[in-house]
Image 1: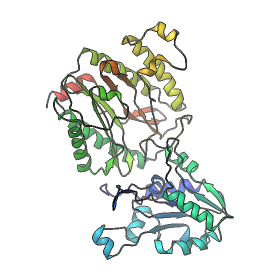
Image 2: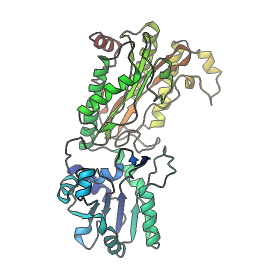
Image 3: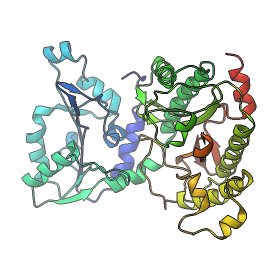
Image 4: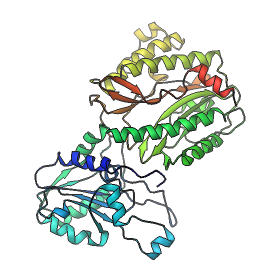
Length: 430
């Protein structure tokens, strides 16, 4: 991992919060993500299961976390099972956690090697009543692959069929939506890296550069600032490609007169950031681009003000769509009469604003949470209105990350240039 060591209190506190949600005499088991095969003998870059990381800070493959707070054997109330290193692994893969390092990282005192997992679990299962198993229940997930948590959970159920099995996913969804002060600081670090990358791009983008060259500049800035990875695959979309919401080819030339839509975000210690900005390739917005950009920015500013305790994602989006409708009318894309006569199931604005306003953020860029969930202090969301006019080759999205507090929304990206004048001024210094 490239990120600096984390405070183990983050994970100790997370486990304390988790344990309070368990039934009496319960045990919870979490398994690390798979090392997913790529091709031949290659695997994709390992990324830890977010729930296991949230509860332990352990960022290594084949790890297992067991939490059994009422276990009669005190040392087994929290256990980490880790892959034991050897000379071959050390030579071919590099360093793995020692037991002492795992304890320092997680705050868990009992660290055992994986070869003791089955025997220890037999002892634990003989005494426990309820077993919480973890699964990916993200509402956007459609994973047909039997991933490690699923496989290992089914194996436990097969060996011990008469226990009471429960779902940890609803508990994790509840806990992970509210960020602690530690998590907020990690998110700010990720945002700070993203800000540096965006400022680098303002000095780099010009007519003739390729989208993939822009992407390369991002990678350079991310890695040099200890980001392990993109929080998501970056969108670097110039011209009409900006109207493709999840454009990922990043292979066109950035041409004079085009806009360049950037949807980017560094990940730091597995915590995500998510920024969208739209800039003129030649450094200057033309008249129509200014009109559309200004309309989108006005919508975002009003939307951020609506992000207060007590609202929901659905309610926020409904209000933002009304604001967006008015701006689209001003841009001449349709009229008020068109709106009066529209099919309610196919509103006029949807052609130009076809996505949501916001989503939860955290250990996943589209983090756990539900659209009907009431905003509470400590939640972090994006705010990302967009206007896409395919006929004019204009696609604009402006996105900031917003922290919900008792005193109103806090824009965590307020220092990243967004005003037309600021963007043009910085690009003029290339």
